[in-house]
Every structure is written in structure tokens, then in C-alpha cells.
Amino acid sequence: MRTSHEHDQGEAAQAGAGRRSFLRATALLGAAATAAATGGVALPTVAEAAVSGYRPDTRSRRFTLAVMPDTQYLFDGPSIDKAPVEAALRYLLEHGKDENIVFLSHLGDLTQNGAAPEFAAIGEAFELLDRRGVGYSVLAGNHDVKSSTTDQRGATPYLDVFGPDRFKGRKTFGGASPDGYNTFHLFEAAGREWMVLALDWRLSDQGYAWAKGVLAAHPRTPVVLTTHELVVEDDTLSDYGQQLWDQLVKDHDQIFLTLNGHYWPAGRATRKNTAGNDVHLHLTNYQNRYFGGAAMIRLYRFDLDRGVIDVETVSPWILGRAAKGLNELERQEIELSGDADRFSVDIDFASRFAGFAPEPARAARPAARMLVPGTAAYWRFESAVSGTVRDLSGRGNDLTVVSVGGGSLGWSADHHPDQPGHGSLEFQGYKSPLKGAYLKTVDGAPLNRATFKDGYTIEAFYRLPADWDASHNAWSGLVSRTGRNGSVGTVTDDPDEPLATLSLSDGPGPQWAVHPLNQQQLATNWGDETAREKWWHVAVVNDGRHTILYVQGCPVARNPHAPAVGIASAGLPWLLGGYEYADKIDQILHGRLGDVRIVGRALPVSSFMTH
Image (cartoon, rainbow, N blue to C red; front, side, top):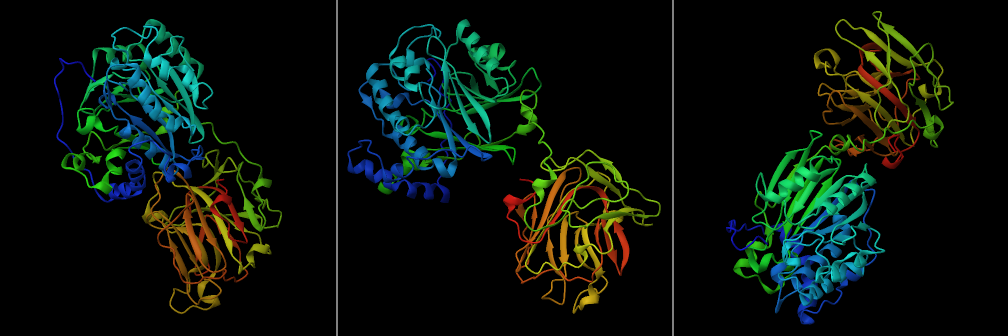
């Protein structure tokens, strides 16, 4: 809480109840009913018991960091009500799995007066997390220590309850400063280590030295810094916050996000650090709102694939009271939806962390590892093509180069980051006039006759250049089977189309058009547009009944439901980078082509070459 002479900057209440809030409320009715039946005693709920063995998914690229700001008005002398805090902690337990909650950070001012009975009460509430081994951090705010002195103040009731001894042996606990007021915590998420650096509300010189030592000892770990005072309002730091920025945050690129309470209303600031990167500094505090903020929590939902942190603010205690019917003020607080309380932060995590923890390039994988059961052909391009390109499956489906108009194939070390082979062929197709070079299977290759009636998986990596132009480059094939559609019978389609082609439309986007054994026309799967100057993985999977087109391991929308069995064959070659029409080469790929694999069965996404 800010001191008494500071001006109240309260904001207008936001009514955030909607369908999502209703669903949350109904999920928590059991907790509310249990609390009511026991007179508010913190007994484990059925939902709590069900998640007692919950552990975060440390590999998922989506995870949640929970934040609880100032709870001091709930622990104020004779006025102690721990129910809101317990409701918030139960919410974390009950939703830990579906939210993939990895950690909770309290931002200080746990109590109003820093008195032993106040700390005893909130300490009991946090035993809900202690009993289940859930990682969390706390830190001292000004009301917790009733002092403007630094972290060298000595013994306090805060240290008695939330000192280092409470956290010793906990999996996420990294250590504490000698005085006990500063701690760091490590957790695993998205396959890497992250740190919460929880700092006292006033660092001493010794505190700064300790914090710098912790950062130096973990030079590749992204850091969320939590403290009680830093941001005072939008785009503004307090005097102490500016000192903390100057002496610690700005010169340590690992710190990408800071969280503090103390002031209200909620606000945000962004600063460029010495490395030239953005640091997001967030103020969250709701003690000025109904029921002292009711132990409201912030959920920071990290999504590394989307490059975003989605932030939401919710009151589990009020949600849990919905069964009784909410009063007017509770209805305004159930979920906050204002811009300061519900927002998204865009972060390209790989780029942001590259200066201190660059993601290592994935090593090339041996070709033998790609030869899953049923592999019919596997080609990779780890050097320039001269003569024959061998089929690494050993089945004899070798490739030869065909030049059109004097065109040739180039080579590049560029490749999709998850591609097994490190290299790609550079196709330089152009139309009109048609010019370039492509690859085709040799005469007599077993692949030329295969019909795949029991299913198939065709995978390829590709990248299109910035100058890819639909007027000259559209409808080139990544992988295609020659032979006229009409040669095996067709009812409604153009008889001169090839029997099968994984092509790039004028979007450009992948399209799979095939003449199945059980149809007299082409079956077509349409993909969405794919950006130029970016590597893509595409896969066509048929299980003997239906076909699904995948881009980056994700199924596309336009996958037909009609049965499609196998691939019709005229006994003619397959092409890489080429597309025939009316039995003549009609278009050549303009772009890079990486590893290509054909398997005679349906593969799950987990068996694609990207895994």
C-alpha cells in the first residue's frame, strides 16, 4: 500500500462477468459450498484432492505464471479474513492442470501491520500450496516490516513465517540472501529454466550485490523480477523504482518482465535496457477495490508459439460466492476487463532471449533414424546435386536431374530448423517461357508403380523467396506423380491434370490433388496461404480411407470427408519440384526444397520428420 499522504487514484469499476466467468464460477461452487458448510475452515475440497498429484507440463510451450498483489487489508490486526486468499490458492490448485500453472508470486504487503498474528494467519493459508509442493515466492512490502530501512533490518515476524526456512527443500527454491529478505526461485517451463527473482521492497548495497551474483550464476536463464515498489503509474517509475532500474534491471538483459504492487490503480511501463531490448514493467494492485481486492490474482499466460503473454485478472473468492448470489459490488469485481487488467504483451521470445540464451540449432539427425517402418522413399540434400540423388530408403527410388531451357539446380545450407538433413536444393523455375530444373525418379523405380491402397504419408520442407510471383510461379509441384488424370478414367475433372500433385497454389499455399483408386475424379485438400521467406513443413496423410493435409503439424480446414483410397498409377515417374500437364512439364518450383519422405502408411503427427 502507498503511504497515507499519497492521493487515491482509484479507477472506475469494470464489470467483467461473462460466459467465461460463469463457467469459472460454476466450477468453484463446490469450493464455496464446502467453505460455507465448515464455517470457513480451510478443509480440502474434492477438487483439491483430485489435483493433489498435479505437476506442471514442463515441455508445453504454453504455461501460466500466477501473481497475487497486496493482501494487507485481509490481515489487519483484529480484522483477519483468510478466506479470499484460500479461495485464490484453491483456484490455482483446481485449475493448475488445465492452465498449466507453473508458479505463483506474491508482490508484498501480505499484512497491514507486520504483526505476528497477521503473519500466522496468512502463513496458514499458504499451507494449501505447501502441502502439495506448489512453487511460490513472497517478498516483504513496507507494511510487512513497518520500516523504511533496507533488507539489513534484522529479525521480523515476516522472516519468522516466510523466511528461507519455509522454502528449504522445495523443488523450485534456488536460495536466499544472507539476510533472508531476498530469494530466487527456478522452475521448468517450455523445456527450459526460468527464474523469479523476489526482492525486498528496499535493497541495500548487499542486496544489490547478491542479486547481481544470482544473475551471474544463471547467465542463460530468463528472469521475472518481483518487488513491492517499482512502477507508480502508466509509463512512470517511482524514485526507488528508478534506482532499481538504474542499478540492476537495465544492465541485465535476462530481466524481461518486472511485477510490483504498492501503488494503484494498475499500470504499465516499457523501457529499453542497455542491450536495446524492451523490458515490460507491470504494476498490479487491487487493495483499493471491494473487500480489499479480495485476493484477486493475475494470470500471465505465456504462449511461446504465438509469441505472446495474455494477461487476465480474476477474483476466485467472488467467483466461488456466485452460488449465494453476488451483491452489487461483487458483480463489478468478479473479473476485471479494463485495458489495465486484461491485455496481451507481444514478445518474440527467441529473439528477446537471443542475447543471453540463444536457442541452439537442432543438430542434423542420421538418415537411418528417418527410415520408419513402411518408408518407401527418402531424399535429403546435404550437398550440391551432381548426377544421381540416391533414395536413402535403399528401395531404389533414385532421382535424376532434368534441365529445361538450360536451367540448373542450386544448393544451400539453409533448412527448416526441425529438418533432419541440413541442406536444401534451390529450384529456379520461371514461366513464361518455362525455364529451370527439377528431379524425377528413374525408370523402373518401385515408387512409380506403388498405389498405396493401405494409406500413405508424404512430407516435404519448403521455403519460398521474397520474389515468388503467382503470375510466373503458381501451381508448381513440390512432389507430384506423372500420368494423365484421364488415363485411368475421369468423370468431371480435367483429364490432362496429373494423377497426384502436392502443389503451391497462387496464394501461395499447399494443395494436394489426387486421383484415388475408388474415385473417378480428383480429391483435393486445400491449405492456407504460407508466408514467403519462411520454412514450412507440409504433410499429406491418408489412412486408407480419408486424407488430411497438415501444415507445421496442424490440420488445415479444407480436408474433404469423402473416402479416398490410395493413389492411381500409370507406372510413370514421380517428380520433385516439377508439375506436368498433358504429359508435359508445365511448371517448375521457384524456391528451396528440403527433405522429402514418402511412407506407405499413415503416420501420426508425433512421427513426422519434425519430431
